[in-house]
Length: 140
Length: 345
Image (cartoon, rainbow over all chains, first blue to last red; front, side, top):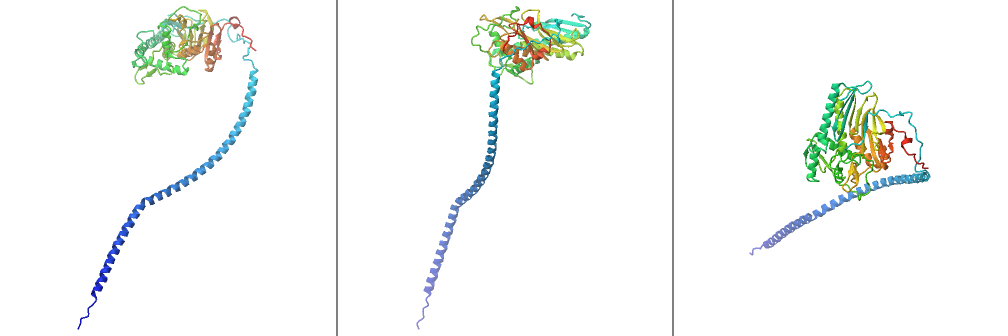
């Protein structure tokens, strides 16, 4: 009787193929993981830079807000000062008018006035008192 | 010494020459022993001051310091000196600042250029004003803004950048120091007067019992007075051009009161200026400073500082500040001594 042959070679072929597939799949997976790691490493500086840029942008926005507030305060103060300057200008105009009036009056005044001599004989001796010492030119 | 002058008070008088002038000292109401001790104090201090400050003495500290300054002009050398000279130089520097440069001890260079040789040039009195004609492009010999004095705060030594003359302020300081020492050593109630060639310091009472009568000599008439002051306690100094004047090498008549701004004799229109104050050194400084303001500027200069000042112009007219009038006991009748004031309307 002919011995019935069992198809072992098929099972071996299937096993070998499956093994090859598994090995290939493992290699592909490993390569893909390495590639992903490399990509992540390459992206990290850009991610950091974007984060810093975001923080700087937030800070700038805050400072712009503060500057805007300060500008509003300064504008209010300037308005107040401008009002006071206008008042001072008005007062200066009045003062200038007064000075012009005084100058006009002073021109009409004499350059000097001759006052009458005042006699002081009542409070001082008419005759020269005894002189104890004389102050005079010195040699030095 | 003479004693017994005056009504009741005993008056003691002493006299010798110092600083180129007569030095006179009078005490009222002191015993002989007190008077001799006081004179010894004054005499010693005046001598020590002259030995330190005089440029007329070969051995003085000032002469040594000036020699060091001349050796290499502009380069200062430390010179060991008496404390009095250091104090006097500091005072002169301060006087320059207080008077806005009108007082300047460095005018010695100009004095020497004009022919002053360090001694009284002439004893002949003259009423001629100094010659203004012939002065071409007046220019001082010194840089007014340059520093000229360095002092060592720990040792009695100084450096001078240029030679200096302490004539007037030196005499005033000598009087100040002698007067302070006398004042500290003498009991109250003793009147005194110290006169060094026209610079006078007094304290009451006088031989008459009241304030001291100090005459301002008429610069046009020796021995006459243009006013008499009544001073109870204080000093009086006069700057005048009547005595110390001479012919410069170019023939001009010049005097010793040099304007630091021009390097030439100053005080146009004035013959003499007298200042009264509490201290003889400052009275000297201000009398010289006011003199240099000239007849045109002296009234404003004196009144703005509140000084008691009297001045005589080349016309012989006496003027004074309000503070001076309060101290004036007598002046000639102005109707006889002054021309009538011009009527300006």
